Image 1 (tube, rainbow, N blue to C red):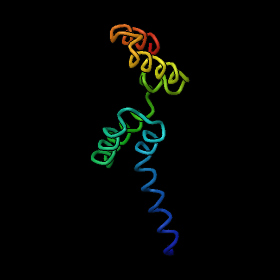
Image 2 (image 1 turned 90 degrees about the horizontal axis):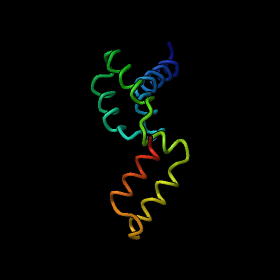
Image 3 (image 1 turned 30 degrees about the horizontal axis):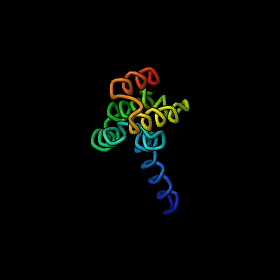
Image 4 (image 1 turned 45 degrees about the vertical axis):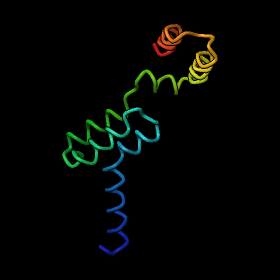
Length: 100
């Protein structure tokens, strides 16, 4: 194999190895740091890589809110809480409604 083919295969292997990290960062996953640690430390085992990959693809309530456009509503709730229009209990209750 020539030098460029070897270099290309090496770059491709690194990209595939860190695919869970790239996905978690791209999706702004709330556990991106933990996913990257798992990927880096245990990704060399296929099981570690697979767990990190599946974890990066999972939806959490906060991630679902970001993806579904409810972010604006969450910001509005936080703004109302900061202005004193909502108590902390009211804020938490409305936030849980939005995230469920």
